[in-house]
Structure formats: structure tokens, C-alpha cells
Length: 439
Image (tube, rainbow, N blue to C red; front, side):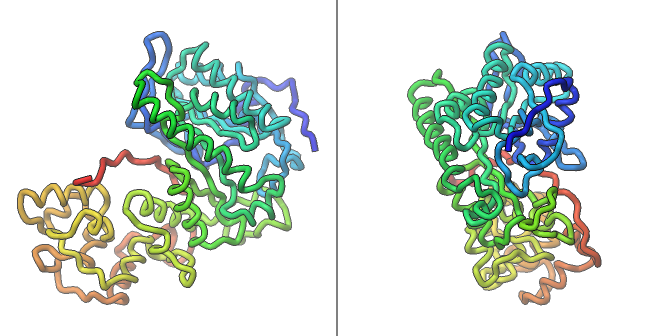
């Protein structure tokens, strides 16, 4: 089915259509890289990353976040922009994207560009348009700001590589967690088809790192890494399957970030779940918490969930839930435990664990010290001792600790104080944590 894009739309009409069409792509991230312009262009890309704010529907408003076009030759059942839908269509030209980016940047509205696209005519045709856009921005306008662009599965690998030298980050959306889900809801796509450009970007990034080690002036390829996105709740995978897929992607493709997008039923289709409770935003929230544990806390998917316990606890975050199932490993003595053990204590984060390790070099650490270091004692106190003593008499029993963690004075998950309600999660970007002590 071919969709015709109206040719008489104004630039603002296109912007309204294509910025709204981009709101379901949550893989919108800051740079994590550093690049200064030569003095002839505009904009810089700073290592601290771009500071984001999010609108009520989850859209990032510090980047110009748009689709190049919402026309698409594919008919994925879950997508608002599928070919069979009767929705307003629009398409930019490379010049129009450049005009918008530079105009918004000079007015200090944005600090970079997030550019995705539906598939216009063919993957290679679309990728060529994205490449032309980035080339004009970098070489004709001297734009040095952050650019995140999609790598289109099925496109000519030469186009993907050429675009990677112009972008800071690239992403290829996995779409759905499993190959079976793709066959069911997106039969025109396959897992291999999606993973091929992801592998290409990974391999070229590794080659580029070796080139930069030899020649510091070598051009940089996707310096901020690549990411992906999975839709959660459109297909029946459990949390254990989803987290295992994410873990595999981190290990095999060295991804910077996996994003999870709660399924929103935007199409009436018998193959899609009804979702009487609305989008599974609490589930999305738990997956992000677990993803953080995989990336920064040394956890494995098989520790957080199992085939016998395949879904996350609704009432407790994954770290607390894991600790309650492994009470034989607690309490942990703050003054002797190693860094990785400290990270497994509920209420102790990466920075507070680093501060504890550093402070112990000067003397023993006690409970008042932990509070000053940022430890959340209302959770941690059930799992730690300082100089052999607990904060006050407690029982290391699952029921006792669970009741106290779920006390009404505690901050429960969204809406869990009697009636389940949901709100959209704000997706803050990667934190640039330093290496663990002694690493």
C-alpha cells in the first residue's frame, strides 16, 4: 500500500505532524561525548551530556525530536504510522530539517537533534535522505551540536557507515523483545534484519577505537555509542525474558542503553492486547530499575528473576526484592564489605558506595556518616551493620522487613496506596559514573 505525502504543507504544518509522530520513540538520549567546533561553525557537544526536560507526554524538549517522514511502506500492527492507517502524512526535505535545527538552536530552544523516520519508498532511499541531512548540517552549516540518528534496517551498509561519521549516537529499534513477537505483529521485519545494522555499527565502532589509538586525528564513528528500544506489553513475554534479552544485547552488541516503551494501543486491531488498565507504565518503571542494576550494580538477569519467578514484584523495587529473597547474605558490615557487595545493599547507590570505600580509609564509618553520604537508611538499615551493630534492634526475617519497607510512611510505587494509578515515567539519561574504586 502506497501513501502519498501532501506537497502543499507549510513548514510549521510539517513540524506539528512530524514532532507529534516522534513522541512514541523514547530512545532520546544525551551525548556522553565531547566535541568542540573549529571556530568556524556553531555548537559544541559536551561530555557532561545535554540537560533534558520532558513534557507531560514524555517528549524530550531540549532536542529537536522529529521524524523525517511519517510515511511508511510497512504495516506493523502496533504503529500509528503504519501504511494502512488514515493519518495526516508529511515529509521534510534535508534543507527543511537544517533550517529548523539551526533556527531553533540560534534561539537557544534546543541543543541538538534527534532524527528518526518512517520508511519512504525503501530503506536505502530513506537512509540516503538522513545522510544528506546530516552532511548539510555538519559541512554546510558547521553544526557541532549533538545528533542522534536512526540506522535503518535493510539500508545499504555504506550509507549507514557514512552517516555514522556524522552522528554522535545511532540507534536501531529492536521493536519487540522476541522474534516470535515480530512475526506476529510486524511480519515484514525479522530479528536478523534488525540486528544486522546493529552488528555493523558495533564492529565499526571497535575498528574506529583502534584507529583513534593510532591516529588521534582520525574521524570519529558514533562516539556516543548505540542504543535500542523495545515495546513492552504488546506481546506476551514475561519480565524475565525481556531482561534476559536486554542483558544479551549489552553483552553481545556493547549497547550504551536499552530503552523500554510501555505499549500504547493506538490502533484497533484484534492482534493487539486490550490493556483495560492502560499502558503498563509501572512495569516499564520496574524494567528501567532492573536495567540500571544490570549496567551499574553487577547484577545478572538470572539473579533478579527466574523461570519460576518470571515477573517483578509490584510493590518492591527489584533490588529490595532480590535482597529479601537472599537474606542469608545479610547483614553486611559497612566497614569491611567490598565495593560490589555494598552495591547490593538496598538504599546504597553507586556514589554512596564509592564514598563509603573512600571514607573507610580514614576510620570507621557509622550510621550518621552513612546518612551524610547519601545512603537511604530507611531501606538500608535492615541489611547492614556498622562496627558489628545494627541501627536499632531488628529481625532479619522476610515478613518483618517487608512489612516495614511497605509501611505507610514509606514512599510506595506510583498509586500503590490503595488504588493502582499510573503516570508516565521521565526517562533521565545515563549518568557518567566514575569507575569503581580499585578498578
